[in-house]
Length: 100
Image 1 (tube, one colour):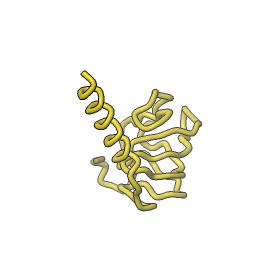
Image 2 (cartoon, rainbow, N blue to C red; image 1 turned 45 degrees about the vertical axis):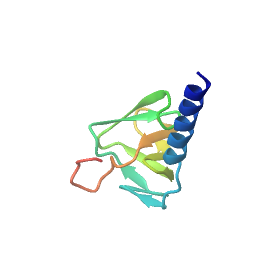
Image 3 (spheres, one colour; image 1 turned 90 degrees about the vertical axis):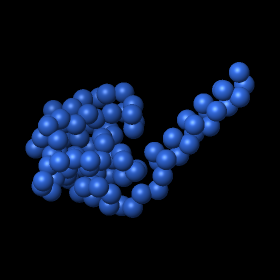
Image 4 (cartoon, rainbow, N blue to C red; image 1 turned 90 degrees about the horizontal axis):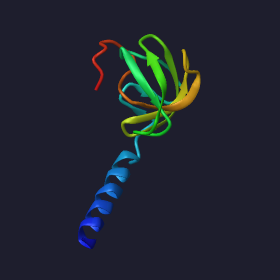
C-alpha cells in the first residue's frame, strides 16, 4: 500500500513540475504584456491551472496576458467576467482560429 501511495505522489509532483516548467515570454499565441483577443468560441477562466471555474470569455473578448506558464496563461479577463484568472494558452488571434 505504501508503494502505491508513493507512486501516486511522485506522479502528481511530476505532473505539477511539467505544468509549471519554465516557458519563454512568448508561447503559443499569448504575448506577455499584450491584450489578446480570444479566438475560441468560449474560453474558461479559472482560479489556477485546472482550478475552479470563475467564468467564461467569448470569441472577440480580450485577455491581458501577465504571465505564461507552459500551456496556461495568467492575466486579466475583460468582457463579462472582468477579473484576474488563468486560461489555457493557444486560444488567441491571429487567424486562423484553430486553437491547440
